[in-house]
Image (tube, rainbow, N blue to C red; front, top):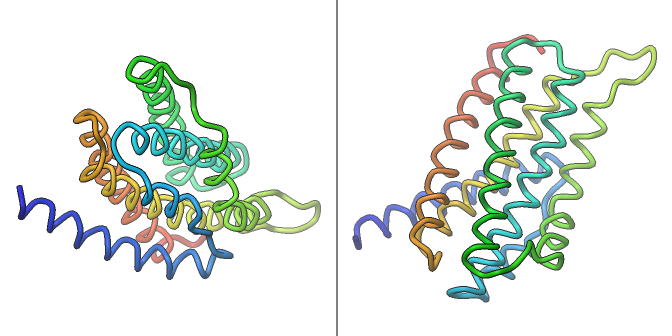
Amino acid sequence: MKKFLLTLTFLSSIALAQMNHDMNSMGGMGDSSTKALAALNGKAYDMAWLSQMIAHHQAALEMSELCVKNCVDKDVKNAAQKIINAQDKEIMQMKTWLKTWYKATPDPKQMALMNADMKPMMDTARTGMTPMAGMKMPIDKSFLQGMIPHHQHAVVMGLDAAKRALRLELQKFGKAVANDQSKEIKQFQSWLKTKKL
């Protein structure tokens, strides 16, 4: 167990360093939501984490829906649809857990912290993914460049929940989010190198 926790801590530090590097190039992302989670434990942590991740997923849905509507590359478009399918279900699952475990709904304050932290990155992504009359926009590339740091932040959050969440189900969910989105990050990074977007 100790070895597992040390591995999670190490992976989290690597992901955070990479995330900070990539987010700086995407317009940055604040850390108010991260600081809020760091100050909490137990039930309060679980409720805040779920609320923040719901907002985080909702932003991913927004970006992915723009991609499905406007992207050209078939692989990128399919990846966006996959994100919509998976994260829509996960949002419903997280809302159900809040209700059944804690008789609560997503906390607007925690969601607002997350949305404020994501705003610079989301504004940059929206601009790059919105077609402009008479201009060829790198919409597919903008989606991938925006989703990579967004996923990296989810990886950090997922690893944090894997070691700090009160509920075992949430620990497992956090680990699954980190694993799934790490795989997608690698795929997106590969496409940025190999595809002409």
